[in-house]
Image: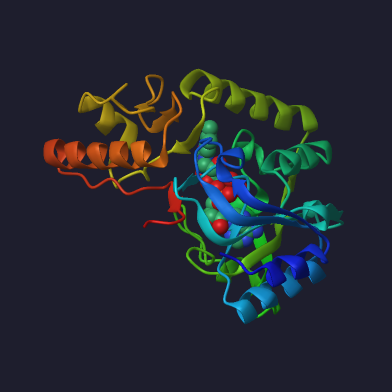
Length: 304
Ligand SMILES: Cc1cc2nc3c(=O)[nH]c(=O)nc-3n(C[C@H](O)[C@H](O)[C@H](O)COP(=O)(O)OP(=O)(O)OC[C@H]3O[C@@H](n4cnc5c(N)ncnc54)[C@H](O)[C@@H]3O)c2cc1C
């Protein structure tokens, strides 16, 4: 448990603090036990103070985006969950068609801003329900586009409170991977180099891709998107379907009848239901197809 003195100090920062906060209210899966403490941090000075305080008090921290790629343990999360808001939502445009966007902003706001400025390159991201920080961390992608195609820099804070910048060639983007993967660095903002394009063309492409999503994906059910990474030479959804697992259920977790790459929280699923279903899918696909499926969804929180 976090000491009261720690909580009292972070409450004095520019934050909103929630104790024993149910993570199912912060994840698209609608699953997850309580975080010891969740705080929304509104400015960089407060963020730095809190990170240094975590170090001093030995409190682990986790940076939450929009929780759209997470499976949180039923036993919750130890330590502090940090959500970026306030000045971390700012978006600015410079003369050279570069948009700088705070990591706490939704990707949707960034896409709309770019369209309104008649700048193309981010249409693919319309419909990905994450934050800009989460999209950089994951190198989010869809329909032949990836964040890496336009991201040219990201400012971040390291665990000692220092602010640094990675340029394009240092971001180490790969399939659902970036230089931030499995580090404690906090993405503060990212810059995107975009290309002038007529607004109606950008809009048409965004609507077209959203329609495709609505037709193919169970977007009205709680999920974390595609559960598995695309295995080299295959499609995870096709393998799962060929193994007869479409609609397969463990507890309240179900392989979506609409898209076999998604697991949906159909009926009050626990994280354990989802983990058991993932394990079952991996075993069947390995046995029948000899393919290893690796998780794209990130499991976090207490394991014992
Ligand atoms: C219906 C649905 C459809 C989806 N479709 C797609 C798709 O087409 N393509 C795709 O790539 N993904 C897709 N996803 C998955 C998800 O939206 C993306 O992975 C997204 O980029 C995650 O962003 P987030 O803000 O929700 O991150 P979270 O899920 O909150 O976190 C993911 C990781 O990013 C880290 N992180 C977040 N913000 C920061 C920060 N500021 N600094 C450091 N680390 C940070 C977290 O610590 C965590 O490790 C989909 C999900 C759903 C539910």
